[in-house]
Length: 99
Image (cartoon, rainbow, N blue to C red; front, side, top):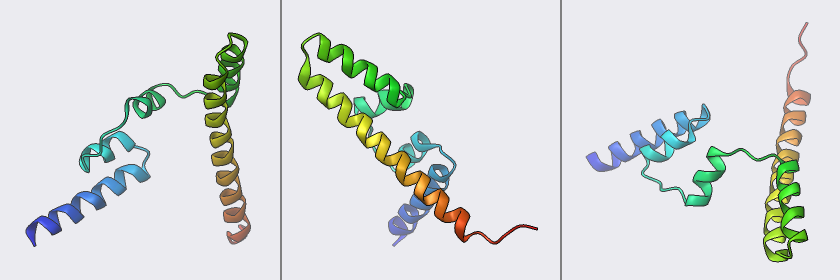
């Protein structure tokens, strides 16, 4: 029972850190390992334009599979942005009017 209580406490603590954008700390608390690619993504925040430029460069160099992989990542980021915007717009619409 003590283990379960400690585990729950750690999960709630990790959730608090994650809510504040401290994802690495949250993962450390729950002992979640990041893949090398995820670590790189956290260190280097590439924009959609950066990804598109990279994909173009790979395609021009004949590395079409890599270009497709990069464009899939760009597409996922676009979808994330769209979802965030939709949530934000709904939140604004549902918020009480301020005087």
